[in-house]
Image 1 (cartoon, one colour):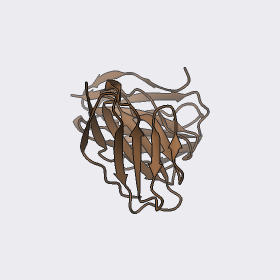
Image 2 (cartoon, rainbow over the protein chains, first blue to last red):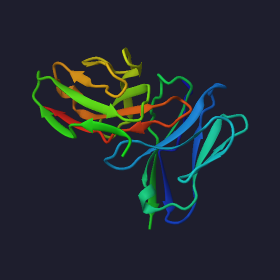
Image 3 (cartoon, each protein chain N blue to C red):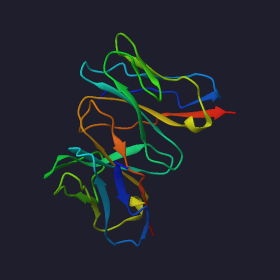
Length: 109
Length: 112
């Protein structure tokens, strides 16, 4: 499995952009990079995923480094509802999606 | 709404009792998973299934059993509950690694 490194915590102000980094230097060429978030007292929620190219959806954007050893989840305008733990998970095998500690995002009004 | 449904939402068990946590998905996903999350910790994979009739162990399978007789259902069985199994249990499903995973809302289990 690719090992991931994420900051333990980050803070943002409401309505400002947030860039959540993830290092996955041991990623293999076939690993997808998934991002999930978990709001307090809820199950994880899919945010976005990609393989090589940057990806956008209604929730966020995913910027993947050219060498794929890191990625950044971008929330364009943070809201209070975006306060959650964000997990970056590279994996290639559907049998093996494993969660690390993630980044706890605090959004200040 | 389409998704993953878990029942019950809460349960208190006595040591040595058994129970089954139910998980159903209506998205025709082949892949299904059980995770547990202890307080303040990340999720740990208990068991997974890649299709009806096929299951395998994850990181922390001891004390649990699963079955997958249909595509929709993936129940998790605790045979002899122990305090160490106090946790929140999440079921998830996906159509494949190029798709996102959908999680249920969880079952909060306390063993006393």
